[in-house]
Length: 440
Image (cartoon, rainbow, N blue to C red; front, side, top):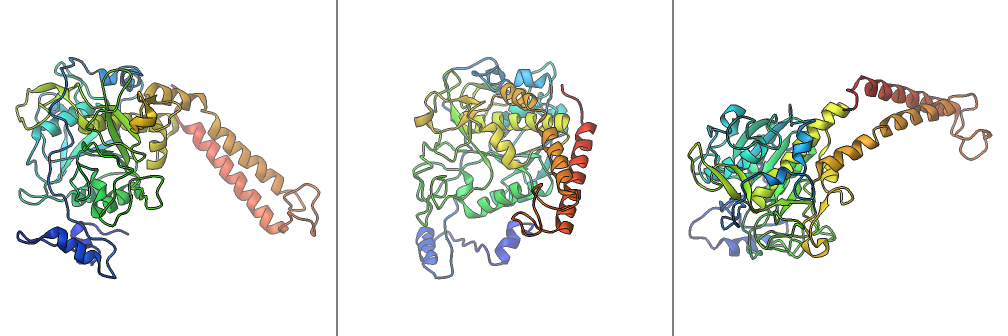
């Protein structure tokens, strides 16, 4: 079992933070990395502006990111069927205005941490996902999700992303969605990079996904080729084609233009690690998108990977809600990531071979494909019953004419037991399917 907090990790000897105003921390890190028993040493980036591009393009007066593909993710169509109801959602940010007029009725609660900075930014993110269906402002992609927030600021003076993630995970259930609205600086990078480049944060994310938590991570606004990025040990940890690649299990998001065809925006990081993209400009939502705290502010110019990530988060919540209503269960992190990043059903960017930001989710196409092949689970369970029936008859062989000395014969008791188990599993699976809601 992983430790419950980053402090525990530190005291356990796995992580050893070094603090000091007058230290040359990069030299300290290089010296420590040279020690034989040290895997890595790096300088934490510390608090930086969240992944949003404040110099956005002209205003867009509507929530076009919810429109039908290829313009948006087709959330308007999907919301007529499911709305995120019952699925937990935690937004990791630095600040928020929970009593905003378009969020107050969502009853957003705080997991831990303090609202210290970029309140308008956090408010904008929440508005994209869970803005209330009322007569004010807009409406979130998944307005019936169960929203909470957690802050990177653990106290007014303490900033710890990894600890915030672990705190959130402790309050979440399998299949809930955690959005990481954060980015970081790094000594080897020319711009901001995803927070998982820091080992403690990577470990926290990996722990989250191992517990069945869906993690959506902003790809960051650094114009960085993540395939070429190297950590302080010279490893290409974000390049899927490298032997050094480390997969946290998170869904990483890039940013593209709001117009069709969607082009990667210049500030967005890119590379094989990016799973999905969404609008990174002209996003209409609650708050001013930056530091404002007024409860009646709105913007039509929110963006960056900070604006794109909530759109993908909303899509994830919709699909989880659909999974429960249609199949009676929630998707695992790897299955949901595969659905959202499937190139055969989702919307490609303008130039996939050079954009390297994955695809934009197309909820209608994903859901319709699931409905088209609704019978797959029934066939699988029925096949298990058939196989079990073939194994049980006298002779106990895998082939009809096998004898004791023939290839394929493994003994009557073993084969008979396998047959019974197969039949029981098949019948149980079919029974569960029969109890699930009918197609909608």
